[in-house]
Image 1 (tube, one colour):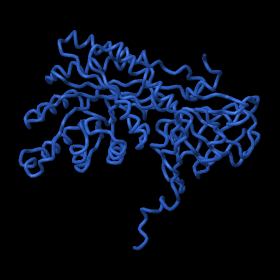
Image 2 (tube, helix red, strand yellow):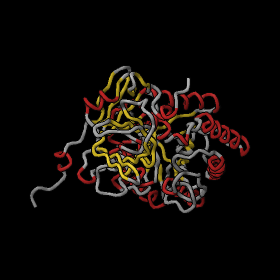
Image 3 (tube, helix red, strand yellow):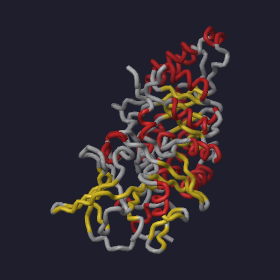
Length: 442
C-alpha cells in the first residue's frame, strides 16, 4: 500500500501514529529528546530493501557474475562498513580515513576498492597494502605506481603487492543531473583518462609486468536517464577489447542512480530499469564484439542510503514577516551543505502534529553565519512553533560525509534503527574534540 503524500519520501518503516511520526517503531520526538539534535537516524529495513532490489535485478538481468560495491563517499562509518561486509558487498574508498573505516568494520582487503583523482604516494602505498583493487586515474599516477612496484622495490618490501589494477575511463559523455557539479563523465571533467590515455596506460602497465584486469567509469550523481550510460558502456567495452581484457576481468559503469528528494520528484527512479539497462547493454555489446562477459560491478551509494536516512532538527527562532516565514533550526549547512553547493531541494514534516493543516509557506534555515545556510525553501508546512522538532527525509547520503566544523559546529550523532532498537553508531562531536588538533603551545 502506497504511503500518502510526503510520507513516501521517508524510510520504508515510517508511520504516523497518534499524530506523531515514527521510524522503525521509534517516535522521532522521543529519539530527539533522548539523543539531542541535530540527529541523523538510519533505518536498516530501508537499506536492506534497496539492496535486495539491486541484487534481485542483477540476478535476473545479468548472465555473468555481478557484484554490488557500496560507494563509501555517500556515508561511511565502521557500522556501515560492517553492514556492507555482512551483506557481501565491496566498498569503494577514497582516502585513508575511508579505508580505515572500511577496515574497522571488518571488511576484508579483497573487498576494498580504492579510487581517487589525485592520489599521493602515501595514498598509493596505503592502497597497495590495504585494498584488493586500485583504480588508477591518470598516466602520471600509473608511472608512480610502476616505480613503487619495480622488482628492486618489491625485494626491499616483500609485502608490497597489488591484487587487482583497474583504469578509470573518461567516456566523454555527460548524464543529465540537477547541477553541473554532479557530472563526472563529460569531456571537460577532471576525472579519469581519455580512450587514448587508457590505451597508453595499458601499454605502460604491460611493459612493467603489471596486469590490468578492469575498467571503471562514472558519469554523474543523481541521474535518471539510462541512454547516456548505455553509450558510455559501449565505449568502455570496445576499449576493453582493444587493450586485451579477457578471462576474469572486471567492468564497472559506476553508480549515481537517482532518488526523489521532494514531492515533485516522486516516484523514486526505478532500480530495475537502471540495472536492466546496464546488464542488457553489457551482455549484448560483449556478444556483438566477441569478448567474454566481465565481472560486472555496480556502485550505488545514494540510491541505497539517501531515503534510509532522516535528519532531525529543533526549531529555535521563528521569524514571520511580510515576505515569508523563516524557521531557524539548530543545524544547517555544517551538517548538510547540499543546498548551498548544488541548490538541492528537500521536504519536511513535523515530528509531532503531522496532521495539522499545511497553512504556511516557510523556508528552513540554519544557525550559521552564511546567507546560503538554508536547508529548505518555500515549502508548505503547518504553523510551526519554537521548540518543535522537524524531520527532513532523504538525508542519508552526502550529508554527514560532507559535514564540517563551520562556525565551530560539532558534527551530529548518528543512530541505527533495527528490529525495534535504536543504536548509536556515531557519537556527537564535542567542542573539545573540535579543538584537539589545535597547537596549544607555539
